[in-house]
Length: 419
Ligand code: SUG
Image: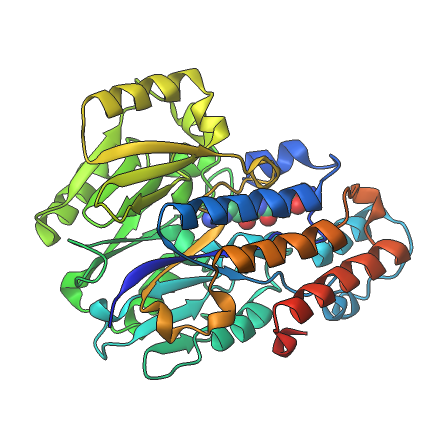
């Protein structure tokens, strides 16, 4: 069995819009009210998937969830009356936020777990109302994609008393993907300027469920200053791949303690720290330098797939040029254009869920090759709305268009179970 890392990207849904719903996510707040371009957004995401495939990597995808979520609207008794408070709730039912599949689940690959199976726990996402209704439909999709019980266990969400945002606050380090790993769970402490979305008790419960041994797991507190500066998830300030951790100096509450614990548990760990003197926390968060895909290419080189916004930030670019010249563990930097997602606070890393598994054990409808990406792109080009303004949400025409678009996608992708 060949265990490899598969990146499952969320296809941006046809209801993609900017409603400014995520407190503590500075991009979401600053773009609230802007027109959004769902078709361009989804095509940008598909180009990123194609880019990874061209690098010789295994690539999967997840379908957008059903939106608007009528059950959610009904449960909150949202009527058609145009009142401002209801407008925010209506927008919550329309959110295409499931595109950020780093928040779909936490994944512990088979080499790390007591029973030798790959465990996934769907994230409850309870902190933000617009994301709190994703879990049931995400669970349905994960149970389909990873239905092979000889290889996978898909767990229901952690109880709502403890917020869990999935892999965005979880990093895995290992000598190589198929080797037993060290799983780093990063949680926030409540009481700051913005919500701490990942609760320590949720992380600990996920680790227990997944059967991670004591030497295979660390719980690390995110620095309150990072959350206050807009790092609403740890993956805005740190990313890991195999033996490398790439992190901002101010990512963790006790950075020296975290580095020492990582080195003690995984002696081959290499920690690349970007100092605040080179890239400030504000520049890191504005540019999303760390919301990158750190990938091992087939020739063994490590590549950092960054958003274009990081490449054009002066301080970040200078630091990256210095890093490349020094020939450290990260050998290539590859910018991609995911601007539509970025404007809602979702960079290249937010858009994907990493699963280390044998691709043959995954439901093949969720795996991609060029022909399948072209098929999805054709559906998007034909059916996704070109533009959505927040005032359009709730209109009968847009509702019909968005429902028809998803139906066309599920038919083309042969996924009737998700309709
Ligand atoms: O949860 N934005 C998402 C971005 C998620 C990014 N994911 C990771 N960091 N892994 C969020 O804040 C914006 C929606 C709006 O404002 O309309 C939003 O949900």
